Amino acid sequence: MSQHAGPTRGAFSELKLEKKAPKNAQALLIAAFKGEEGIELPGTSLLKPAALREAYESLIAVGATGKANEVTRIPAPKKAEVDSIIAVGLGDAEDLDAETLRRAAGSAARSISKVEEVATSLGDFGIAPTVEGLILGGYKFQGLRSKPGKDSEQPAAFTVVAEKSAREEFEAAKITAESVVIARDLVNTPSNLLYPESYADFLSAQAKEVGLEVEILDEKALQKQGFGGITAVGRGSARPPRLVRLSWNPKKAKKHVALVGKGITFDTGGISLKPGSGMWDMISDMGGSAAMAASIIAAAKLNLPVKITATLPLAENMPGDNATRPGDVITHYGGITSEVLNTDAEGRLVLADAIARASEDKPDFLIETATLTGAQMVALGERTAGVMGSEDFRDRMAGIGREVGENAWAMPLLEEHDESVKSASADIRNINAKREGGMEYAGTYLKQFVGEGIEWAHIDVAGPSFNTTGAYGYTPKMGTGVPTRTVIAALREIAESK
Ligand code: BES
Ligand code: MN
Ligand code: ZN
View 1 (cartoon, rainbow, N blue to C red):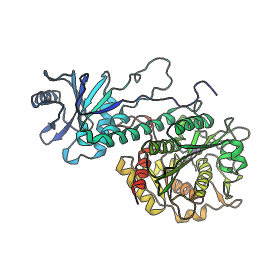
View 2 (cartoon, rainbow, N blue to C red; view 1 turned 90 degrees about the horizontal axis):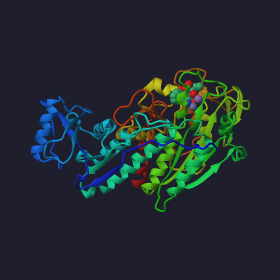
View 3 (cartoon, protein in one colour; view 1 turned 90 degrees about the vertical axis):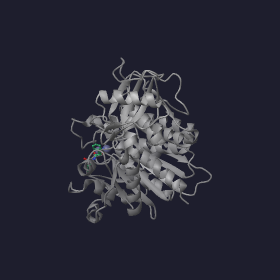
View 4 (cartoon, rainbow, N blue to C red; view 1 turned 30 degrees about the vertical axis):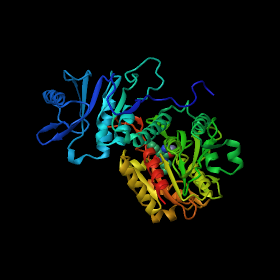
């Protein structure tokens, strides 16, 4: 294993909750609204009315409007004990919702530099969105530069000024956001450092630290136990595959949720090789597994009373001389045979094994997520996940996604695919004869492996898990951590239900 094997880590803000601004605060981060006649500043415990008035006049003088995500920094009023005031726009006060606040807090955290200590009153409008926005927006992935770059500064530390009663919400939001950071770090780590073995080792160490049970199957165990999909995808690489199983088993659990996530540490396409341009984005093809690992770690830290098992198939899809060929027939875990017509449709092959294995435990719910198809982005764009599965649970998961600001939309499984998934030389075929409905076809392929009576949702996050455009709100470039917050919210909901 190379010296750097394992994930590279990004930096993010340290957050505290206090009743008052700390003495050493250098800046105050306050809210601004866009009123009919221009910027409006809500009252804040951080500034006396006279100082607030002075800040208001300075903000008008520099043209601040209070529109959503506008960040304006001004010198502090004379009597304030800080150097500067940072106002962030929340838009129209009447339209304020959690996501607007989360994005504004994120925009502020992302743009603040050269300030070490910031006290903020944004928590007045919502503790959890403020905490999540600040941590997620301030996240900076520094990679492996040998010299400090533009992003190398440690992000500012924030004190959220609020009452003691906010403690529980504050801590839960912090755990949630810091879990998203774990998922982002894993996604952003290049594939020469993060490969099945190093990835499994890292997950094992992280999981044990929070009290999860860990089981890792290596390539020999996978072959012996009949994991034909994972074996078929991993065999073209010099770095053999792994299956990681993490479980959280609290005493008071009433429900059992199985989590499954695609963990292709790099996807060249295999023998059905991808074009060179853009192939580098395929370092992110393990984003589903990263989100699921982050979610079960969060569940343990939150001590959620729900049984959770994460089944994470890890493999590198390479065109080595031992690689699977188009036309090969493989036998999945559980016995279903599949004709591999395109080795680039590898995600469904590893997920099929994992879903079949997860179903064996007879969970109440099975949530699976993957960077599965380019067709997801054709259908829904780069920021909205496609959710398929059992109708009610699918709709519920899509709804939770929208509630937490990880946009998601329910998509149907298509009747015609029940026929077209059949193969002449095996039970099923891994690609359709037509490209239309590619996201839905993958859903139908996966459906074959879900056990009877299990409520399941398949979340295709090919677009939303990896941002190849520019940072916005609390979403940085590269790994976004989507859909970690959706899965954590679902686990919380299921844990609380009777
Ligand atoms: N990992 C890709 C899907 C993907 C593409 C994710 C772009 C993120 C960005 C997946 O393994 C894949 O290659 N899918 C093929 C399936 C096809 C061969 C049926 C695709 O979408 O082209
Ligand atoms: Mn592929
Ligand atoms: Zn892939």
